[in-house]
Image (cartoon, rainbow, N blue to C red):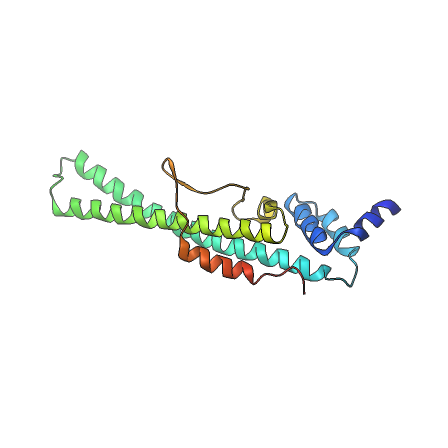
Length: 184
């Protein structure tokens, strides 16, 4: 028991914060509590723990917002597709203005969907970069503590192709993650 306590005491602030996040991701509240209770009161352990949570909050906020918007767009696309399919099945002309308008709407919604997937890829890329810069495993953005699990190489696909990263969103996300510090 004493050896384990010494091991806990030897953890660096970042190692302790990552260990706490890992414990929470596997729903091991007892281990997380022990890591917090046995943290030295000095040395930046609190800042590192707060920093990991801030990074998780940034990741979760932007992934959940983007996924929500994507689902709303896809819901609209489904409605348009059903309308067009029903129109044709009912014998409607593909040259009718209402049908063409819906087809144009579908094409626009596809572009919005692809853009949102690019935004999601930007969030993921910025999170990976932040982890690499801070020597933190990307697994802190997985498990129960993450809205959308992040793997080391994950990007979102559109059809058979990797969706591009939305560069404007990438700049914003780099700025957001850049503000998250693990040390004073």
